[in-house]
Length: 518
Image (cartoon, one colour):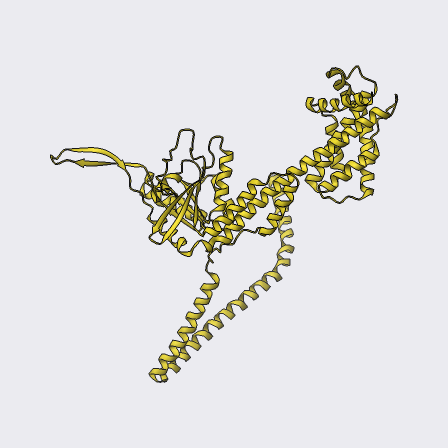
């Protein structure tokens, strides 16, 4: 049986392949023809080039010697010119330092003036602008020494200078076991040459224990400076990489400094330096390796030939970095002022945004509270036994309009009406839950349960308007539009919120309102 089956199967297979091979044959013939033409063209071009070169060489030989040299020089110039042009077009272009996009100074000042009129505390931001102006007038070059704790930033500054800005001996900067003791920004003035001076800023290190405020201080100083030295003691972590990219966005000169090079063997140091160069050449303007601080063991012999091993301070190796800073300093602070100003203004503008957002949140809270109290008072004054728990449309419309105006979101009246109608349906389906929560609130606070029957409905109305206002504010803030579905979904969740503080606050509105109506 197996032998009788093999023949038919192979025959069927052969028959099925035959049409396929026949169908592909014309395509293969076309490809072979195209390849043959391409090959012929290449051969013809090569032969023509060789013939032309031979003919040119023979013609040159027949010319006078001086003319041979002239023609040969012309040909060489054309070839070299083409090679130079190709190199210019294909070579990697050096990264240009571009100042961060920032608003104009007048725009930032106008924003701060408006915020001050809205009772926002803008004193710190005004001080930042004043410092920006002071340094611009001073015309001195500021260099921020930035990086994580224990990277050797303070030691690097000590290697450059031992004098404070005021000329006195600087206080010693130590590193404790908690990780970082630099608490404020200290400025140290140093002379690289007789006529080249700059100011080094020692800023708090990132990732200090409970150091969020100090980290912000360090970041602000990095933006105030003309040049930033990012100091690391090894390969960069993910957080350090992110910090480096954040600093790069401001367009000012950024130098990656690999410190504590003495802790690595020569081969390890070379590999690490090459790795950092490959990874961060596009992000930084230079990568240098230095060694500051630390101790070393040396053998010392006395006059009698006795020897002993002593520990001494290792000499700092900062020559490459010093030469780089001299190059920057020779350009003058004015060369880096546009990028520094853009960085500071961007930071101030971002903090002004945060202040404006906080003011909007404060005003939104005031609007929600106002309408919640109105709803409570209205319920206490007008509610009758058996009344349906339906939201008061007039108050709801006013609430949505005020919040829309606050968040600068244009909303048509027809959209507000449609949203209020949708809210009514949501409230009706949540009536039992809202009344239950209101009843628990009335029982939980002494004095409420003994008041009139309208208190229960008043608390319920308060819960509804408090939930509605917060749901609408959240939607306007996050979506910059009155998204009915999103707001209704948020409203449903807030109606079920039984947090004690919220219930107590609304119950107190009802208690005060009841007393005022008595």
